[in-house]
Length: 179
Image (cartoon, rainbow, N blue to C red; front, side, top):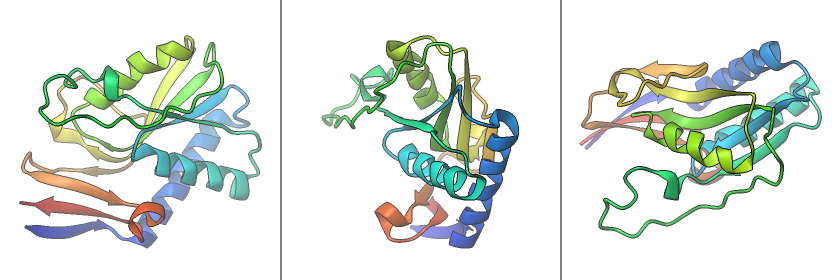
């Protein structure tokens, strides 16, 4: 197994700030905008972006939620191993709000399709956007594209993109792993 560095910790920080700038340009005060981190790995990215928006852009009262899509996936009954659900933490209504789904890697698009179904339990958003740190552009099974992307990566099917967060993995970085 080999591992190639795609993004260093410094590059991840630069990209996070660029993504935060793009969000500010589009949403300004975030009064009608909700950030939703897709469990499990999108939560780290969503929390980081919220922190940058609050501390560096003085954007206050950003609404952040976490969405578990485990039982909305189209393949959850097709696996032999038992699935472990994460926690959904959305204690607000998304009715007529702009929702920004946040995830670390966009691969086949199936997780986002699941999130589109799951979010409807909390109301009907006026708009849904997608922000991802890594866009694996040649692996889509569904016609889903990000509105905001940190980096586009060309990886073939036997390669895996691994995103590490200092909160969970001890350091920031993005790696391409080949088996």
